[in-house]
Length: 355
Image 1 (spheres, rainbow, N blue to C red):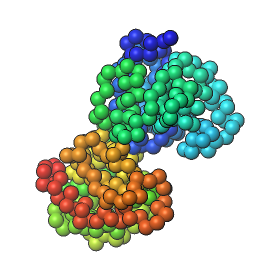
Image 2 (spheres, helix red, strand yellow):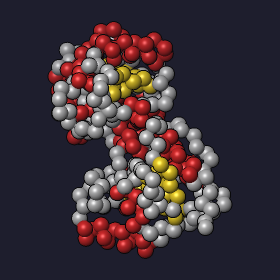
Image 3 (spheres, rainbow, N blue to C red):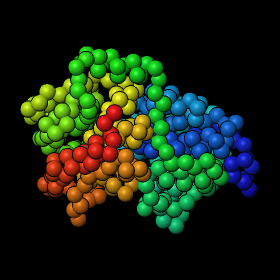
Image 4 (tube, rainbow, N blue to C red):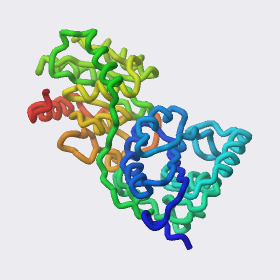
């Protein structure tokens, strides 16, 4: 039997599967860092969604190669096309991984995918009594923060450098992009406060009227310059926020690359966001932040440093839930008042968040 402990085994090729979104990948970076430290001589391939290619390029110190995931039956992130998936599986088998790590979630379909790659060793979490065909595995730790769940996989493989801090490398071009965007508004006041009113699932979106109310009050209290952020698919949501404001924000929705957005957040004095990817960027670059939690499990996704990164939530019996659209009255988020967010912002700014 192979001893898969780091330092005792030297796989040539490692595959890591995590076909998820921005926040999910940021929460996996400490595990990627630990796996690289544990297997410094291996070629590490990351199998992820198409968008993640540019993300992976930032982490070349931990990942050598990116492979675009094309879908698998039962994995909802991409449409399953049998012929395409068959070609993909065949190509990955022929490439010949010594170790394949399922970092997608609790097991089930994801473990079937990782086992289909026919790597010499497969590792991941599973639910129930069965290891679901994995060479090495552990029961899914559903009571831990996400960053520790991912680090747990590295620990299963004997990796010791398991430090939970997030990171997101910034390049000169990222800083230049952010500076160019802000240069358009040379008289912007301080503090600079970012508001991100979008989120991929509608169930995670705090009402735009509430964001607008918070923005206007922060201008009144602190003379702040409000910067509205959002992706190209969130411009309507951000425009709705802007329309309901009585003060004038800087609307940068759809105008930043991923790196430019991270550099912009890095320049802010405070970032207020729904529970979505850019909130995790704030955690990674160290900008004081407030994340508004609704249906997601805050115990899993909340930042570890809750002095610098605060959460605001309204506990209800139906949260956490997995609905993308709330089937009732969105009480978990409507119960978070603008006053709650403003009070948290006042406390952060009073403790030195203003640059």
